[in-house]
Amino acid sequence: MIAAIGRRLTGLFATLLAASFVIFAAVYAAPGDPAVFLAGGRDKLTPERLAAVREQYHLDEPLVVQYGRWLWDCLHLDLGRSFQYGDQVADLLAARFPTTLALVAYATVLFVVLGVGAGILAAVRRGGWVDSAVVGGTTLAASVPSFVGGIALVALFGVRLGWFPVTGSGEGFAGTVHHLTLPAVAMALGALAVISRVTRQAMVDAGAADHVAVARASGIPEREIVRRHVLRNALGPIITMCGLVTAGMLAGTVAIETVFGLSGIGSLLVGAINSHDFPVAQAVLLLMVTGYVVVTTVVDLVHPLLDPRLKAVRSPA
Image (cartoon, rainbow, N blue to C red; front, side, top):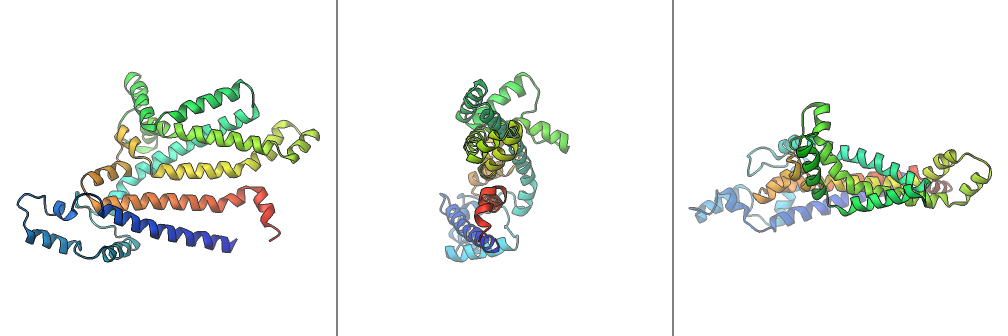
């Protein structure tokens, strides 16, 4: 187990190192010269002024040297200063990240509770109208892009009925829940469809095992069989998929935050790219990639603890 954790952590750091270089190089390979932006535009721009700006921000150094300097600063939690706002990038992230994290957490609760519940119900009632309704409803939900669903929710529940606010993140716990309900539902719709399908199939596969048939022949109540033998063996793929979907959400809030006017890291990234604010864009992308890799690594480590079949295989070793 210790060796497995060591391998996972080594892979984690190697992935983050490679991702950090790709992010740094890709941002600087984007169209536009950051030195021109920092110098105040092309109006009355002189070669001397441009050279001074390049030297001040180390833009005249080779790419590898710039990357090494940036990576060293990141390891010391110094993400630089925003070209556009003039503030520390770490302060901008600290102000925006809680909104994104709350949105992702809310959407995760929705798709886990509703998606897993719908999948279990469809598996238990397999072949009936409940199963058909769940499959049909999730197929429809998966076919609607999140930003389209967000616009429809705003038009119906925000504008027409007036039940929920359509912009802002609110204040306090109750205010935050109220403001983030519509964007969280919009984010959770597609994920709910995926999780319900995975849950249903995992339950069906686990229910076809020989020990489940033996349990039924022994007269054990069906509710107990589903809880102790079927659902328990199906938890592995369900938890894995929930973790992957949540990790993907951390990097996929741009459209939802734009539709609902939320001040999260997704909207911050869009503004940074449009204004060539490279330090902010690099920091946001690095944060998104780090969150995705960390969550997927944790899921990979937890998976053997949740699946009794994997524990049985590994125990003799």
